[in-house]
Amino acid sequence: MFDMGDMLKKAQQMQGEIKKAQGELARQTFTTGVSRGAVVVTVNGEMEIVDIKIDASSAPMNDSEKLGALVKSAVNEGLVKAKEFAGKKMNDAAGGFNIPGLSGLLGG
Image (cartoon, rainbow, N blue to C red; front, side):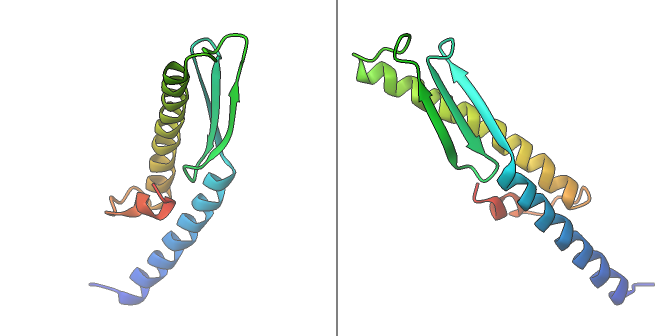
């Protein structure tokens, strides 16, 4: 038989787990480097860029198009790592239920 009270209790429990996962994601960082460390980018689990480091001795400082491409590549790689981790974390928090839009709670 369907127990609405039990279902509400489980939903509240899941909501708590999701909030906990969101807090963990805010603290988690992902660092990626391209072109042997010429550009290194760090993003967090909320899909925000936390840091960008450019090694002037190995980055193409005189070629803005190449430098821009390296920065873009490093940012995209970092975001992919963060999104994959966030998706897994939120899926785990939801108890394995596939809830449409759940990853949208992360801003991603």
